[in-house]
Amino acid sequence: MATTPATTDLADRLDRTVLYQIYPQSFADADGDGIGDLRGIADRLDYLAWLGVDAIWLSPCFVSPFADAGYDVADFLRIAPRYGSNADLEHLTAEAARRGIAVLLDLVAGHTSNQHPWFRAAIDDPDDDRYVWSDAPVDGFEPGPGRRGGYYRPNFFPVQPALNYGYARLDPAEPWRQPVDAPGPRANRAALREIMAFWFDRGVAGFRVDMAASLVKDDPGLVETRRLWQEMRSWLNSTYPGRVLISEWGDPKVAVPAGFHADFLLQFGGDDDGLPLRSLWNNGTGTTQPTWGDVPAWADAEARGDAATFVREWSAATAAIDAAGRGGVVGLPTSNHDFTRLVAGPRDAEQARAAHVLVMTWPALPSVYYGDEIGMRYVPDAPTTEGSRLGPTYDRAGSRTPMQWGDLPAAGFGPGTPATSSYLPLDPDPGRPTVADQVDDPGSLLHLVRTLIALRHRDRRLDVGSPVEVLVTGYPMAYLRGGTLAVVLNPGRAPVETVLPGAAGARPVLTRGLRVDGEAVHLDGFGYAVLDLDPR
Image (cartoon, rainbow, N blue to C red; front, side, top):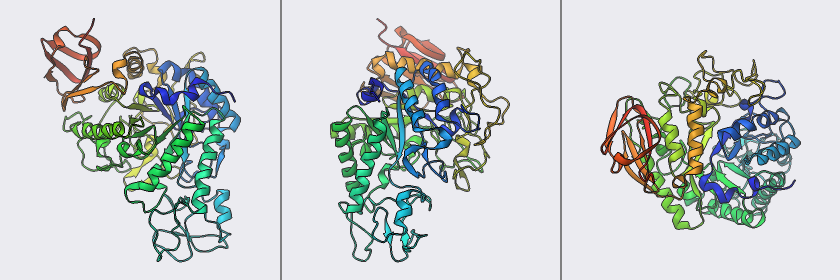
């Protein structure tokens, strides 16, 4: 299909891009079977354009037995029938591009489903080295089910055999270890390029790469893994310039110099094992709710946390990216399909407003998880679905419930929420927020997020490359963007104040609960202020 600026120039505009993550099973259902699909997403493009997002990222939508919600891929080149067809994906990319929205897919690079034809062939062929295979039992390996016998290495769940990209270190006592340039690893690298090219040619603007650090095994310092992705980036730049690769690595200071255009700060990864993100919003505890340790969150009504850990890690990542000289950005998500939402446990949507202001005004790539813009909550005790449970207190289903559209009019942004969902039930709370309830309410969270996205687009001081000066990291948190745009945030319940030079003559851009007394800035509980200190 013909390429468009929405597919070919995304790499050049990441500095100002707002990303929106869609979990396709749960976003919008066009065919009425109770599971979201690509036509449903296409029906909501006017909503996404109205909201102002620049790119959408779809969690995996390929053929799969769905033991891990689609992260167990059985055919990388075909859309799963539950979501539609390849033609539906091409229709979606074309319609999105017409609205200036790029479409990114999720690439599961490190493993396949055990139902993939590659694996079905490997279990019967002792010479097939597409996967990591041992003749003898090995700790952590799974028994092979075919005539070949032996044992294969999984990459996550047992039904997700690891693709063989080689080992950085060989060991004669472990003969299954192959070097990174062996035929099997080379074939898998070539297959990665073929998969990406197939979808680029159908209008896709890029990929978010699942478990991107997991490819080369026993790789101290991830030297060979980084070399692999640098090779992929060189191929991308020369063959499909403008397309992007965004990683699930959780360590931007490593991942972006390794070749990715962006990497998210996540609830795991990096030197602090995800602490920088969790120290911003550690989203509660509960019997079936992820528990991330006793990390006091900055976005906490009792004001027990501090954003200093986040700022320190962001600064280190930015310095490493600048030193590498390749370009790229740090990603900052509101939440995702693996982490509890901003609204979780005791935190409500009013408390989450300051967090949204931070995401949209910080020098990073903001990623809004579907429904966070209306304050959808993590639903405790949602039924375990398609591998969502990872432990006694860690079930991801509560972050994957259906998008709450409400009773939208026929002339609005597509049909209302289906009466039933066969994937996961709707949030049972009768007071659950909906798009329909907020779309005409200028004081709603939805309108705040829309206003923030518009502000980010029009004020170049909010570009990723524009400087930031952090003044305070606690309560309130305060920083300057571009030297003259001040952001002051209070996610706590109690009123706070700070001294802000230049506040007396500042022009309010976006405020809630603000009072200025000379150079003293006072914020009510859950208040925020964006102030132009140079209002000429």
